[in-house]
Amino acid sequence: MSELERYYRILELEPGATIEEVNQAYKDLVFVWHPDRIPQDNVRLQQKAQEKIKAINEARDKLRSLKVKHQSPTYSQPYSPPYAQSYSPPYSPPPPQPKQPAQTNYQTAQKNPDLSGQDFSRANLSNKDLSGRNLSFANLSGANLSDTFMHKVNLRGANLSEANLFRANLLLADMREANLRSANLIGADLSGADLRGADLTGARIRSGDRLLVKLIGANLAGAIMPDGAIHS
Image 1: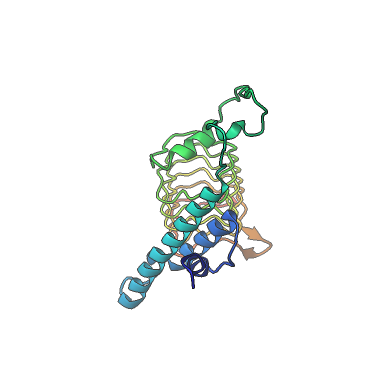
Image 2 (image 1 turned 90 degrees about the horizontal axis):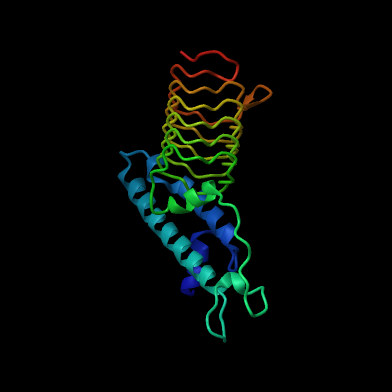
């Protein structure tokens, strides 16, 4: 078995899977094997989880770098910027586009994990990895955070009103005093999250009588529930 085939097998993918499939497989497996989900007193499983996470990270990084390399254009002429390839010479740059601070801010988050107070209103952050980021008091109103990985994220005091958190992973997130009014929380995992004082008025958490949000071990003391009642 080649190294490439081994990486695909680690991520439980078929050879030739797309970058989107690689990213999704990575998030699914990290969610399953994250050491924080394993009892601390189970040394054998903790060690196995650490080894799994290490292999998953390596496979994801290798496959992503390989696909980016293969997608990079090659030039027989002197180098010109990649975005010029759709133009016939002489090259004329496209007109400047208005800045989109939310997207730019997310890109810089790879180097700077402190995004407190940033404006991500209406931003498309679906499938992003925001785990461990400091988004306290950030404006995420109306943002698309579906399938976003936000393990141990700091969302204290953040504005998440009308945000789409469908299937978002908010395991152990700090969401004290967060504004979650009318947010879509269907399928979200809030296990172990700190929701003290959060406002969930009108948030979607049920389908009929069925609760569709994971709240195992979540702290809801003083939180305003979707029906307006204050959790004791």
